[in-house]
Image (tube, rainbow, N blue to C red):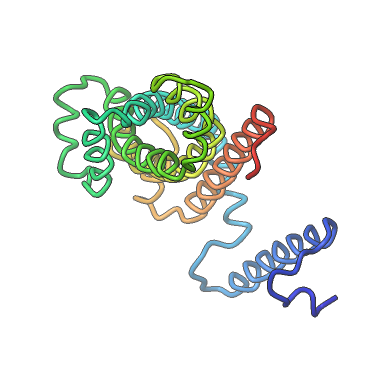
Length: 257
């Protein structure tokens, strides 16, 4: 059995995959306890993290989590609408350069342009959403353009044999035929968005959120709370990813990935 564990491309049955996951979780916990057993340690001990959780709940952790999730879902909704409109119209020769140009903006840092968001948006929440929508849309558009580029020519030829017009081909092959890929692109890029939320919330603290909690505790070097917040952010991100993957498999049972 051990030989299978170190053999490339070996496929294991379901129970053994679970055993491996449990093994590595125990290893991580063991290293954590061992690394924090002395008087001086670089990372907070499990006791400090558990105390951090209790303190955070007393400080309104649930409210801040709700604020961060609301910001994430609003930003994702607006961003995916903008991105889909731009990408679905990119087959038009007139608008193709626009989609490619917006995709290149992903290399542009947000630090130098946040001032302009403060001019156009009067509320902290509006500015946070605008920053995330601009940031997210560049990555969404880049990924969706790659999806369209990878569509086999056979699918377009099949639509032509069915006497589909150019607009019908666009609708059937690109829009309807790749909806499951849209969910997968959303899953892939949402991790980046979820990471950026902490940074955006720490810029404007008026609306609260997990970023505000991290920023406040970082000032006072409360490493137990910071470590606890990182665990909360990681768990929430994984739950969102699992939920989106479940929705994709439920809505698009024909999907092969």
